[in-house]
Length: 211
Image (cartoon, rainbow, N blue to C red; front, side, top):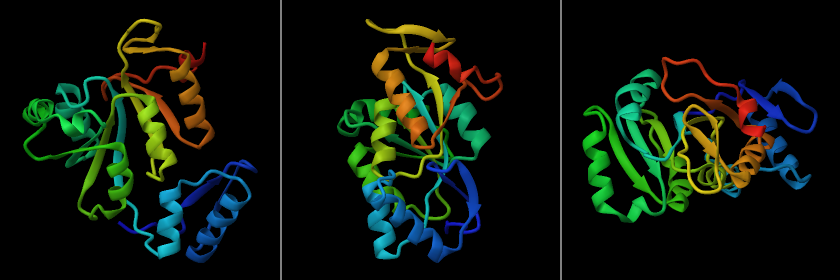
């Protein structure tokens, strides 16, 4: 899928949206980077090499359970994903867990189990017919992907289970102070946040994360 260069792009410094041609878009990204604005190192490499294709990321979800029924039977169909990409360093080397998740995945969708680094390095090589759902275990993993240049615009916060040091802030979301700081950083980088366990329920207020 090629970038739509007449798509809106967000300039965080002046809080405005504007239309860019291809040449102006590339020059602005580089200028913002050198002026101190955040642009992932992978995105800079892509611009310099002239590869301006973009992966079709239909969903980025935080879910402690990664691929399971909610993802396989509900979210995949709603967003039209045909490739489930689990970005997780531990699972990338665990064939047993991969096998369990493969059994849960819908028959029409492929699965990939990549480390965070491999995801960053390979995501821009996705073909136009790969409609991708990225599933991460933690907000910290999502932040690493964004900082690495994965073009994530929105994050669905699905399941973050209760654990020591965490507090319940939404129906299926428990956070600690590091999680909250990570979500704030994602917002600063222009990533939209959504708390929504399944597609057919209303989204919960993001303000719950920061109370």
